[in-house]
Length: 245
Image 1: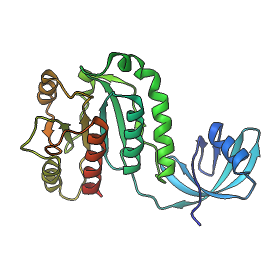
Image 2: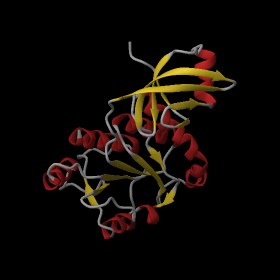
Image 3: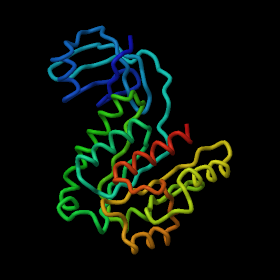
Image 4: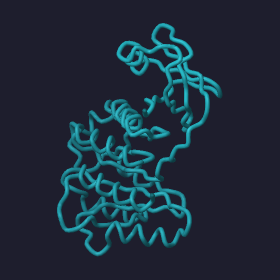
């Protein structure tokens, strides 16, 4: 039987602790008892663990042995803020596909009320990423950064030989697949870090595309069809994940 997997709130070399909602669910719903086994994610590593104690609203575990786990893929998604339910969906699915980091940003066509409310949603997005990481049995939790302006986000670049790719509706000659294939051939054995910028509903403005270009981002296409922002992001993440795996 597959062991349940939890993500430690606190840990050291020999033990880990669950608190808050995770501990409450384990205690009240799963009827936690001393000696129950699970997998525990602690410090980007996965351990076979057993419950060693239950006190109040916390559950303590003894870490027994390390479990082999796949690392996150070196992929960062820069997400122009769009409808929050769809933001949660793309964060969840991209986490399942192995994304390492998310950078929410406000673009020219981000709806004003969404831009104003985005900062208050970051903690919820982090919880979505955490739950998706646990569900997909990842050995880590992707980082969800604080919301940035597009002008600030566009300057964040991966270290060489990283790849910065702008999903652009107007681009037709260079596909995401072709850009990734070329980068992988250049980098030989090492997977490059990949940054993917996903536009808002309504797409990038010409000025924004020019700004990305001036900062060295490469515009790429996902094909002739016009996709919703969340569909474009998940499609791009799936393509990149398949090529990096």
